[in-house]
Each structure stands twice: as structure tokens, then as C-alpha cells.
Length: 588
Image (cartoon, rainbow, N blue to C red):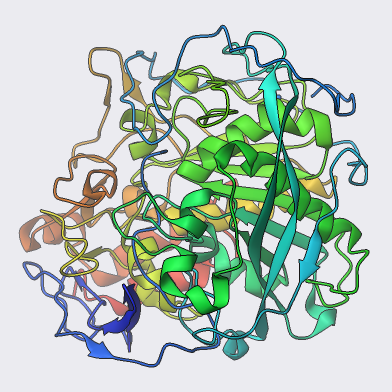
């Protein structure tokens, strides 16, 4: 069944019935109600469930608004507290709206042939923290928004560790410009910290593929969330990655932000009471120190349990993506800890390099990823991100070590990241169906219309696979067409006769549509404006488009094969898309 666990205060409740409603075709195994065209997913009254499971088990919104390489070593003693002379930015907890216009045509460049240079081992410029663990006690399991099935069911295990040390702050050593070349060095301030990491790793060491994906946990909801694990976990599991979630920001540990007060200390003081976060100014160095600890593992405690990492890929979504923009542009050139970056759903700029109570060091409201990098960066954007979070004016051409993927028919968060992804073990074709779910978490997240049900998760899995291949020195990810944006104020997407955006990365749900899928147009509370919309076609339109079932299935199969050939859907995911089409009664 499609149960999800939501932790409210100290109560753990199950929200069932999250299968949603689709075009009235088929009730998947995970749904508790048969989907009909006009229906909306509902949930029965919450019931109590045990707190301890083999994986973390919370399900609250994982997204929200936010709160490139010189090869020199860290300067180590920079003490200037100079303020950046670039344009001041909005608080990183705000979402800006794009005001620049676009030509609406794809940015096309010659196919880059650049190959990343071998990343040096973590330099002595980054301190190696003390590691404690595996952590036990308290409520019995790590607290992080993540998938809620037993990891052992898919051959994985989890462990949690505490990391402590002294974190350094950074300051600007010159103006920060739109080009992303942000000269930075160490500031005078340091602070003691104690944070935690959650590790998901293959039980069988032979299954490890050598790559550790390190996610900067998102705190926009007022708790530590791993949205990119939720989006990509089926690919990470089947290919044998290790995933590490990092509590990099103060809100996740100490509280004080987001609509849900679910900080580690608030939810499980017995387990997490010894943690201490000195403030987000120190988050960048804390994230570097986690990377160094994963590489060097010189102490008695090994969070990877003997696995030998060959590559570290940093990833972060939404607010975490804003912080990774700043990390890539200002910090990476000083430390060289990570071998590649996935920046998922960023806005126009980054997050402050330093903020109160430390000296303010803002960054530009619009900024590119610097082009002198020695490692690959893939930026992944939905329709919402361009026109709501303000990414549009920060578009830049693809380069030897940079890719930008924009995906048609997608929103910042959607039915997969809010509902289906939490229980997806990789074999249910329901994850490929278009569903209408307006209330992902009844009583907490209720939107005014069904949220987006596009194929972001399928394309994001292809993106992480392509980035990993690139980091290994293999073929770069394909260059993607840009979404087609019309000039004007405000900018708008050019759309087809069904209202679906033109351009961008194409998937079967926009090329063989059964609904209008948009990253825009949503209203309601608690982040609904970034969840996009789904408007199902009525029976008359479906019959006109697909007079026979075989014709519909053939069209979906062709579109799926085209997406696989283009490199934007993985071959391993194609059978689910085709099976879902075959099992629906469209055209019957």
C-alpha cells in the first residue's frame, strides 16, 4: 500500500491513499482508490505507526524557495571582511521572479569535447573532522525525509554518523560578477560544529560502483530532506552508488525556519542533543569537511564500512542548489574536494557566501556557473525554475565542462517527489502514469488544483548517470535544447495546441500527451506555487487523439525510444513507461 509517514511534533502518523487519480484507466498496486477523470486523491484519517523503521520515514515537502576554476590552494589567512561590490541580492529565503527576456530559441554551441581533469585528493587546506558512530539511541532511526520502504528490500543498508570539528568562514577578495568567477578566501572567523550524515550503501560490497553521491540536504520545509535521493534512488540502487545526506544548514539541526518545526533537536533530542550548528556561513566548509572525511577516512570510524570511493559527486535541489552555485563558484577552486556537481532546480543567483551574524557577503542576483572549471557541472531545471525561481536570465551556453538541461512538462516538485517516489522500489509502472493529486499531504499540503505529474524523475535519473559517466572521463552528457520562451514582460512559454511547453527535453508525456502538464499556474498554501499543474484531457479529446489502443501504445513506445536514443531517459526505465501505456485503456 502507498502509506507515507509524516512526523508532526513528536507524533508519527501514516497518510494512506496516496495513489491519486488519473485518466480513469487503471488502479496501480500502490493506490487505494480507483482513479477516475474528475476525482481527486484523498486520504483516510491518519493512524499511528511505529517510529523505528529500517529507513528514515518522513514525508513533508522537500522543496521550496532558497532562505566556476583557479587551481590555487586555499589562502588560509585571508582576514578581510570586505563586502562584495556586486549587485546586492535578495535574502536566500526568497524566490525571485525572472524579469529578463529570452529569445526563446535553444542555445546551441559546438559539441564540447572537454574531459575533466583528475580531481586531486582532498588537500590539507580542508580540516579532517572527527567521526563518531554508527549513531544509535533516541527514537531508534535517523530522521530525514527520504524513501519509506526498508532499504534491505533492495539490497541496501543505512547508518548515521556524527562529524565534528572547526569550520572556517569565507569572504570575498574582490567583486563577485555575473560570470561566476568569484574570488574568495578564508575569513578570520572559525566556529566549532557538530553535524551528522546519513549513509545509504549496498549491503554487498561487490555491488558498489565506486561513486559516492553527496547530497546537501534541503531545509526549506523546516527539516532535513533528501529530495534528490527520492528522485533518483531507483537508479542509484540498481547501479550500486553510495548516497550520503549531509546536514549542512542550521535549520535542519537547530530549527528556526520553514513551515514545519522538525529540526533534529526538536524531533529527537535524545539522539541529536549534542549536535551544534554555528550558522550557514560555515556550511560551505562543513560540506567540504564531510567530503574530505569520505575520501580520507583516517580515523577508527569508517562511514563507508570499508568501501573505497573513487569519485564524489555533490548534488542538491532547490535551496541546496542555490548554495551549491556559491560553492562551485567561490569555494571549489580553493578546496577541490568533489569531482562533479549536479545543481538541481536553482534560481538566478546563489546563496550568500557569508551572512549574519557573520559579515554579509552577498552574491549577484543573476550568475552563471564559472567556465574555468576543472570538473563537470550539470544544471537541471524545470519549467517552474525558469519563470518562478528566476533562472531564465542565468541561462548560459553549454561548454567543455558544463551542461544545462531544461525539461518540458515539469515542475519544481511533482506527484513523484511528493507522493509516489517515497515507495518506489523500481518495478511499478504506476510511476509512469499521469495522475491528479491536489492534496499530497491532506491537512498540511493542499493545493487548489492537481500538481504536476511530469517525467522529471526519469530525466533526472538519466542526468545522474550521464554526470557519473562524465566524471569517470567518459562521453559528456548530450547537449539539450532549451525550453522555448517568448520575449515579453512577463516572459512566457510558447506552447503547443494542448498547452504544453515547446522546446526543452522531450518525454512521452508531452509528445504523446494525455494532459496539459505545466510548471506554472498552481495556487494554495505551503509551497503549492512551485508544484505546477496537471489538467487531464477529457474523453472526447482522448478519443480524437488516440482512436485505437494499439495506436496509442505504439506512439508512446516510439517517443520512449526517441528519448532513450537522445540520452534523456535510461534504457532501464523505458520498460516501465511502455508497460504503463499498455495497461491503460486509452483508445480501447
